[in-house]
Image: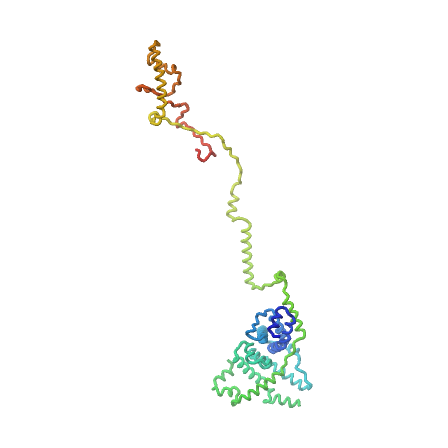
Length: 193
Length: 241
């Protein structure tokens, strides 16, 4: 069943349709919100508000303009931007410690290195300006096309491409130690082996 | 504009890429390799899974959003957030309107109320209305200007009286010639008594005329105009004076 039909049924009070819709999109929306905000609690709140607003105002979604997934991404983006404006993009250290760890590996050193790399990457991504950050998250993590990302952020494809290019350049600088060309990651892998 | 971008724009186009990176322009394959490496490195930051109870909480809110309380309950629980200056202005306007409405509801305008208080109390007085009608009629009769109408009016009577008088006069003359011993003046003097007719109180005789007549005017109730007492009766009819 398509998202549009599920939304119609959910707007009429069908809980099963609403749950199906939620299960279909919750993970991606949560990941996007998490990478935009850097906090699991805030990401859950934003995802929750996004689905509730969808049910309360189903007429706000126009199937002729975009797919429901694009609409939901845009809604999460707006809510995340509202949070960032309200809180200034600052998050407490305690939240970072409560975050779940990366996927567990067998080797302790490898796990340690992955955790360190994850933390460095998180810092580098969160240090990006919000407009560049959202493009990186949408294209690199959610694997959306440039056109989809442009539709979500409400900009031209060329603008998105430009933002992505600048964001990558910043990330390359910030994470230079981990690139093989600089020997960072390569040496770490050699140590692990 | 950042310094990096500004410096890049100052360079010739073919040197821009080299100027940014600080070394000779490299091919696009190197960028693609860097992007692939970067993408692989970015995967190191994994997102956590959402909480398990997030779905239940959302479902509860979904049910609450679907269930709509009755209108009266929503009206009782409704909230309205208004800025303080706006609320103060609205409150003042409401008080002014209430005062005006109360004054308008309590009674007439103050000027009308005072005029109403100054007005004397209404007393019901029965006014006796006389039922009798007194009508005073004044009849003026002038001797000199006895008009033709009056003459015509009295000529008929005079003719009748003259015929009666002549008949009696002839009878008196016959009596004289028959030895009664009375002349014409005597007959004239005795005429009223002889005829037995009522003599007028005021009259004149036309001695020159062969047949004299008397004006029948009753002046018994005559009053001069300056001695009239005009009695005005109030509450009479409209056409009465």
